[in-house]
Length: 433
View 1 (cartoon, rainbow, N blue to C red):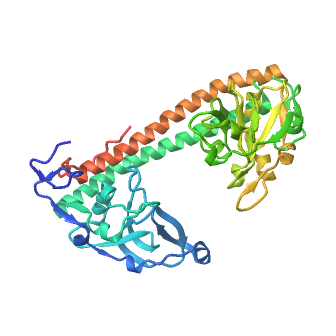
View 2 (spheres, helix red, strand yellow; view 1 turned 30 degrees about the vertical axis):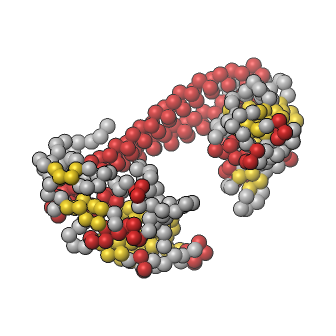
View 3 (cartoon, rainbow, N blue to C red; view 1 turned 120 degrees about the vertical axis):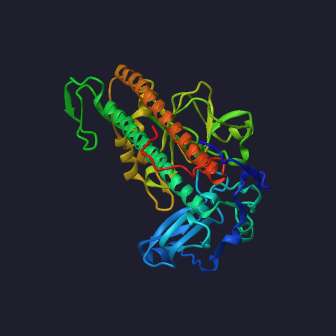
């Protein structure tokens, strides 16, 4: 796409040159601030006002209520906690209609010479580095908001820019949504594949029998139903606080890391402790199964990983350890313990409301379908191969989404700062692919 015929210096480093016919104007000269009309509602109050009207916070809609403060075209700009330094997420939102707004997002009413949607795009292209304060939580004060510069083209160009960006960003958003659905289907396929293989095996012609367990169903005739208590010995991790973590030393695994840093298998632990800390911790070895003893939701409790590295490591508190018998394949057991039918059993065993707990005595009662050892090894080889293919596709599609988001933001920025001239653009039927 072509550039404008002539440019001038904007006087703002992160903007650079702008089209000669555009003006640079600060926020307070083109908007009226309505922050004084904001009314925050806590969760209990919102629960008593349940409805269909959006209740807005710094990152978007956070609830729905049955009353409103505003019913007009407005621009909302995050005040604190908004993604000011994440170019792929919005800081500003255009609203038209009934809304309730809390005290964590600014409210701006536009003057007649500026389109709200245009200024919304402008706010989402700002380099917020010199406007944000706050030591623990990023904050855009009203005075800093007022001094943010915007590039204002003639009104007709604003309309053209909004039409162009509405059309192009919708194309990109549609493609992102399509890709997200594809990823979701791939993940469902992966889950279904694992569930099938760890309960039915690989041979579609094998003779089946009733397992006697409702959520397992039929299993191959040579398989057996066994409780986890028969798989080995349970114990618990101990110690290892955050303050004890070192940059180098003896490798260790901590409870929180199982949720945030590891998937199904741990080969190389990411944290370390010194010898003194190791003496009060629990040592594990290759092939041990680890469960988290608590989580914030029912779905999170008992997350299961297998340690499959070569070195002895230590584990901290709130981790339940299962040392398997020698006639079991740890990698197969890890597939079982991450299957839907086992996760279902974990969920009904969870106890607690604010923090949900699961204990060794609960895990011991989990029922599983177990094939002979040679078949365990065959299933692991097959699942490793198939899930690797799915995971690779998911990774590529995820990267595709990130690239689309980056392109979307780059396109908006190029148009709103006048690097691209869209005055002659007409709505076409071309689609992204």
